[in-house]
Amino acid sequence: MIDELYSARILKLAANLPCSGRLAAPEGTGERVAKLCGSKAIVDVVLDETGRISAFAQDVTACALGQAAAGVLGEAVFGASLEEIVTARDAMSAMLKAGGEGPSGRFEGLRALKQVADYPARHASTMVAIEATLDGVRQAMARDRADTRTSLAGAA
Figure 1: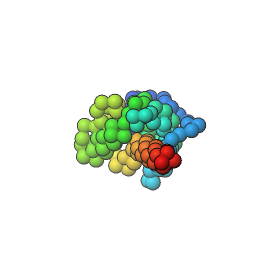
Figure 2 (figure 1 turned 90 degrees about the vertical axis):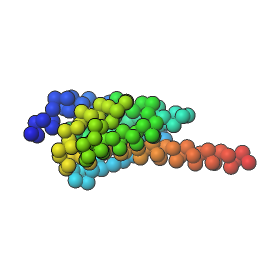
Figure 3 (figure 1 turned 30 degrees about the horizontal axis):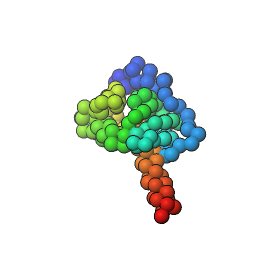
Figure 4 (figure 1 turned 120 degrees about the vertical axis):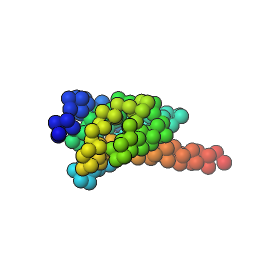
């Protein structure tokens, strides 16, 4: 049964982690750790003027499942909005915990991890990269709002 979990597709995704590393000047950084297994993701983002991801890097230390999820994320995240990432995260969580179909659209590749639903101890490691990405985007958006307020106050 465990062999089905670590399929050739999962192992291929895990081995090809796009956007590996860190950004020199991120606008937002998110970090998540799966407490049960210690899988960790640090994600740096830069947003464009519309609030979509224009630069992305990830430093992921995780099991093959966490690496595979980060691999899909790294391939699909450019141009994504906060809302798209939240929707993908929620669909991923529903897929793992409630028999949902999984994400659609740009993040549909995360459906390759559907069999992880049968292994609750692996859910958190599968979610660390997307959760860290959300944290990074939210931080970048908050920073942008703070910069705008400072600019407006200086102009007054």
